[in-house]
Image (cartoon, rainbow, N blue to C red; front, side):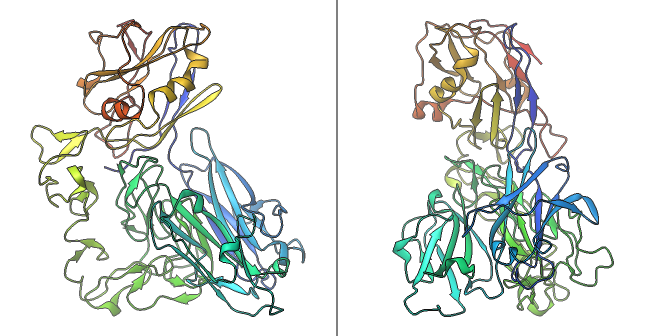
Length: 560
């Protein structure tokens, strides 16, 4: 099942004196940045970037700025309304004089904010036509995973320095010179990739930086290994993303490229010339007809960790070249699996004649006959949850041996089932943010003492404990609190899965004299199940869960 959507729950039962709203966040705000004239800011008659909001985020607030101070920290011109669409905002450089022939060089962003959602920043890029360095692969961004090895940033020098003594120089995020890479046109990361490696890298000849003819490249680092989400432990299994889609390491959801949509990016929006973008392919570069690739020549950037790419069927830094035979999709980055490679449609990957190669199926021949480890089903989109992440039966999902921790075989079922986990959550109370991240193994990432430390200034009185009851394993986790008395302790339980897991009046609450059973990571990871959501089985997404609140040491509770 796909990772669950963002939910918003309001709680009104903190003792008799308090009423605190609790907002739950996780999924990005869905915006697309379309960039025009980005490879020739000093010669193009139209240089701008446009920010599109997709449903259900059309009410998000947008702001614009410079992502890093590459040669200057001058903010971009003020945003204006798109002349053809009042819901779209744009920043236009070409209407503001020659200053932007140089000041327009660098990375710029559109940022979207919305209540109960994560602030989402999408960065795009501009350079001069006479740039002395360009990305060797014809793209401005690369997304990698934490602990990846062999990662390389490679740039091509198109022109020589003004003086032979002007050596190649690198900076990151507009900061200090990276002296260890002096004289090189590439950066080879010798150690496994770390979060600190992500950023915007700038290359130029020493003494020529302020000509603004250098090159820029952005390295995006997912905080989880490939196929996983929910940092820092990353126990969650990503939705299986097809056609160039990328798994969001914070939510497990797929971020789909132009012309593809759906939970797994399997739905093809157009088989002609693309001309579709947005979460539901609701936008077009032109509404005149679909027989011309109107989106060609523009750069499209999406929320992290996707980055930027050309439209489907186009490649190259200027996004103005056709795909090579046997490739298709965004930036021609996907491989066709047609029996007759020449029949592959470069916009959709559909094979017009001859069908799929042996071992492949699906509407555009992208589904393996044998699913990758962790997935099963006709489209390899269901998740196995097998011990050791081994492969399961493609049809039934049955694991060869045991289920993963937190999953079991339910009556009448062949595959491992358990608590279907939600996205990363952020619970907000007045005065602080409590970030809660959990995984398919139902392990709470913030430790007991971290949670209690965050909550105690507002909710708990001296000598009280906060208790987390694990309804699966029947165990408690507690932490003592030492604050000025302000009210009763609060226990909030979000439930997921079967109704018989809901707390009842017969559940025994521990007394404050009991000894804590967990005080750090090991016990918490193995026993604690604090936050759950109840699944609405009739829909693909989740519905708000049962929320129970009661005083410490009081076995009665009220469901709201």
